[in-house]
Length: 260
Image (cartoon, rainbow, N blue to C red; front, side, top):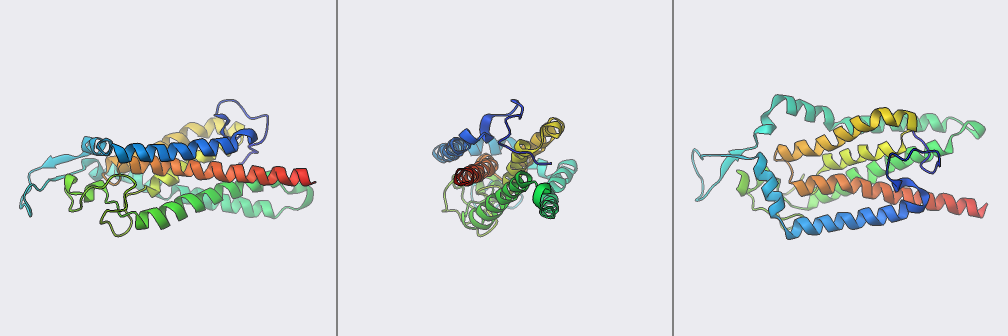
């Protein structure tokens, strides 16, 4: 399932993100892009608000609890088909991860000439990206401590909390907060797998994976569960981690070759 990102026989249909001479540069570019977008969303919070308003339907409050209270909902979150899609996609990255773990154990059962070191290295790269990115950085750190309320939790969209811009830790959300989207990060991780799938299979699965990878964060925005910045930065965060681990892996591999 996994191919060697160093292989010169790879097709030219994808960016040169994974070529050895560009892996470090790709990480730097993606890292700077992530912080640049964070700065953009932080300086212009109206971007998040404008996109959220596209999916919000205001309605008259039956019993207003405070002056100027805004009531309403995000109707897409009540759509049965869309909710079923979200439920189907929710565990998809971790089902894929389970398959990759199984493949890695199968790979480790081989020794000597039958051991595919490149396949094992790339499986560890994929699993390491998931563990460090969506699991540790996003879900266990940022979402736990960022404090940013979700759109449907803010007083601008029928909630009770004040709006805070992307990157601010001043919000009153206690846990499982909006910044950044964990599901978008997992979706971005799925997108990363496109680059390490063997060429024959890649042409068949690249488009479906890309569509699902983009649809997952789009649904979170439409449901009022995340702002656009949460989805974009969450999705991109996995690519940053993936590029970083790839650059580190290639550096270590090249060092071993030079020592031998």
